[in-house]
Image (cartoon, rainbow over all chains, first blue to last red; front, top):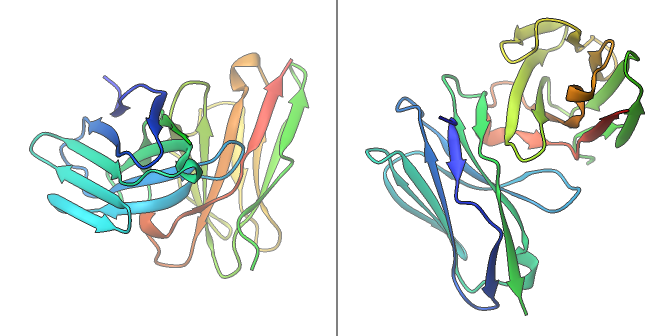
Length: 111
Length: 115
């Protein structure tokens, strides 16, 4: 079983729609959860972090965490073409510096 | 303020050669982390270094791989006698003293291709 799994892409959504990205993790002890955005050929960029159950909103992004189900998601509202990228889910693995990443979900927003 | 700088961006080596990947952390950052991304897989933690110290190398293969972060100069990830399976993107990240995962900043990576 992979430590972090993301829903397989690619995910194509029309401009203005909601993009929904899902991630599950295997280590019940994980404490910190992150979403990174990575444009092709560029560095991963942190866009959201979440540490407790529930929702966390930041602009058009909402992260949701359910530790009982070992599930974390990211919603992108009012999707824009500039949101087209690969989104990486990451969780801490036994320490606050060691991250385990999912393989990523590629999102394409159609104009 | 330059971000995390990695070079080269692309590196081609033949089997059996050595690969040296360099990483200069962001200004003010003293912690460096190396991750490897194989095709169709997520980034995998390799090693965590501070100046002149290896803090955690639990993700490093036991043979052929080594890393250093000297007092002066960039961090170096060295792969000796490369094999085709070493072909991957190698990412470096840095953080300030006391910084945890939320303060990680990644470089753009080095794509290593082994012929």
